[in-house]
Image (tube, rainbow, N blue to C red; front, side, top):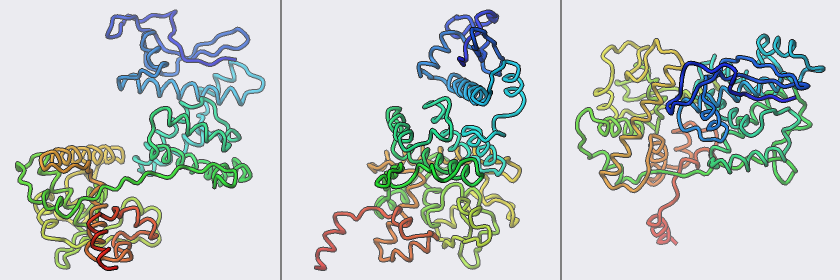
Length: 413
């Protein structure tokens, strides 16, 4: 039995690639007892040279990367169906492949794919994309994975594979936590039992997910003042980046997703406060929504007046980053593009001000927490400011103590 996606050389198309090579239909080829069947499964047509590039990992264009994902999905689905056929027959394979979707099965890849579709239906597009990246990575590691393959040794080998592919420790942790969530889901649904649960402490013979490397990127008060005093051309990328980074910094380090979703009902000018529920946590605490409360500082007020929409109905968004009629996919794309633009502007600002740090929108949250601590706020106060569930989470946002602070502390001894 052999499964492979190939160029169907029997039927060249009247087309060529950018280098003049002939293009062929790309089909799923199943070989069983020396018999071959070719199936059109909707994969982009390619030249033989393009297919070789994909197979060798030289996926230098978006077209080749997208086609690679199509090939992985087709081969993975075929293998899962074949594994469940006893005895095998081409007719039954064809019926299952083009009939019952693999996502309705209890297989590992089927459960993973089904969960991603559920996330999309809930409008959690960013999370769905993250899980899809994890799934694609697993499919690159091994085309066919069964639940009983997921041993501590398998996970160790997968971690080594990801390291060899140049994945960072943070990315490896994200992918493995996604995998762990799928295993937990399978246990909940009764697909597998807890007896073979592979995750836990290494000292207990289990696989321990590597901790994230927390590179803290807080700015000093002096650096923040430099940004605040920067004179940028009105309406320029630097001007927009400066304003929204400082707006985030002043309203408790709110991320760009929360800023994009701010509505006028969240703004209380009379009380001088902004109150909102973080998008990251609103689904987890539906019965007890915890609101972030941020003071409208003069700079935050100025940003609202500068960029807000004119129609201040309570349910309207404050800024025009996203629209009320946007689909979840469109919202995700708009916020991603907006955040990318801000980060590019921040890079320009740092270069102009000679700030030797790589700062992003996320740095505003670290900076907010660190400056509060340096100015006498307690960890408990900062924890309440962010509405964190534990002190451990709060500590992730506190930058390391500076050498000058160490010298000041030594004088107290």
